[in-house]
Image (tube, rainbow, N blue to C red):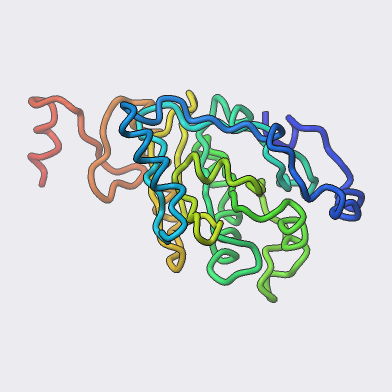
Length: 257
């Protein structure tokens, strides 16, 4: 079930009018946990120190690990793909792949180019059984207003994906992409599989946008490997040869190089 079907819908206009009354988000309304995020107490202490240092403009030590359960989140305020205000939980995407993209801020420069580029190719990700979701530390009202602005003037217009409003910074911090000094998220990209396991993690610094082509290729390759049990070599594209992960049987691939 998609997030737009899983949550109750509210009239956007009513919520925007009530913005000043709702800007304070109770911490209990957003639950975010990152189980098994560190191997021992020293790892926990180091991660905490890195994430709370006010003088650092670097991404904190990542609090999630590829191959382990993705940090979960629940009831995060959002603008849904249909333009309604609602909320999104990681569990909404159970049984499918999820490409979760963090970005620094609405009404900026690189960010609209990324969001519109990914949204325009949402159907290609859907064909690979993958949903898209984006997240920043802006409010849902900022997201809503940004969607009202035309692309030709720096807005994003209608998007085929939900925009999560991580105002408490809980989700960004759990995924290790929060810049504590600015309160913004670095450009994190995470692929989460059907079992909610984190499979791919990458973080760009704020000035550099991401490649939709490469993100789609990674999702397609991961899905192919999960289904067929074969592995994908460098620069693999759908339809090209893969490798059987066996010393003898892999020779059929390497013998053609």
